[in-house]
Image 1 (cartoon, helix red, strand yellow):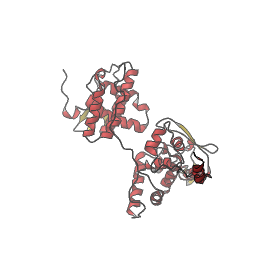
Image 2 (cartoon, helix red, strand yellow; image 1 turned 135 degrees about the vertical axis):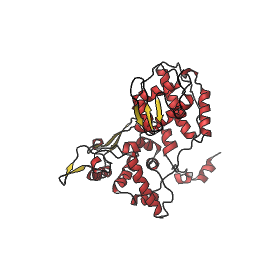
Image 3 (cartoon, one colour; image 1 turned 45 degrees about the horizontal axis):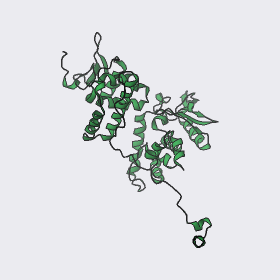
Image 4 (tube, one colour; image 1 turned 180 degrees about the horizontal axis):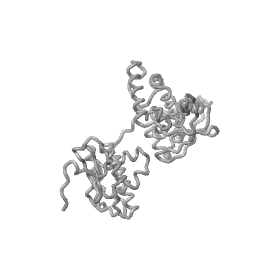
Length: 362
């Protein structure tokens, strides 16, 4: 029997250890020097799944989740993989020692209830989604004959319903740097997710056809047809990021990002998520501090995607704009505010005399 793990290492995956003296996580493997994984838990888990070997037998849920995190999760979008890392940590803590063949639907319900009592009901739904996907892959890999999770009722969620008005946006817009103003204009025109917005580049733009985007989350290909409005935005973005200084002369860059990193040395790299959050928060603080009554409550960058969908004339148009394959998702999450419908008109307004109609009836 092996030595019992110390308290700080009990909830860590097999082979990962935490060195309190160095305040660093390491991967300990037989016959080789410890591999440094990082200072933070998130960094350590990300590197762990890159270095650790895969156990294809998957005798425990830890082995099964571990295999999914090494084989499948890294192929997902960057933010999805990042979210999976956090979810996997909690799943391993509760399911890690179980045999995959012994997991039942009641265990999923117990987990959802437990996380709800811990104050994370919505996060529990995301973690269960990962667990369900892992079990589906277990069937694919021949570890299980069928998935135990069918029609599991998750914790109730209320979709975000913040609808940004044009007046609020006008106030915020005044306190944004020019590149962020262009970001907002393009976001409202396309409804693209943040991950796709920051990775837009000159390769996505065609002067004849328009803006072509291969979305990172659901791999949908969308072409926003060429128009003068889009062309004007792209032209101004090129003036900001499409040139580099060489001997005090502006030289065109062959491949440039619409929203580039701020530092001159990183001008040819895309804007990071943290860089966008910092600029957004700074502009929002200034806008709220201005005291203008039209903006009394902050809104988030993701609310602009919902505003773009809500400003569309129809649900079908909004679904196509956002690249959804299911109208239900568009309607439930992104179409906010009031649904506009035509009121029923009296027959008299249709050219029919109501009195004459009544008299003719037997």
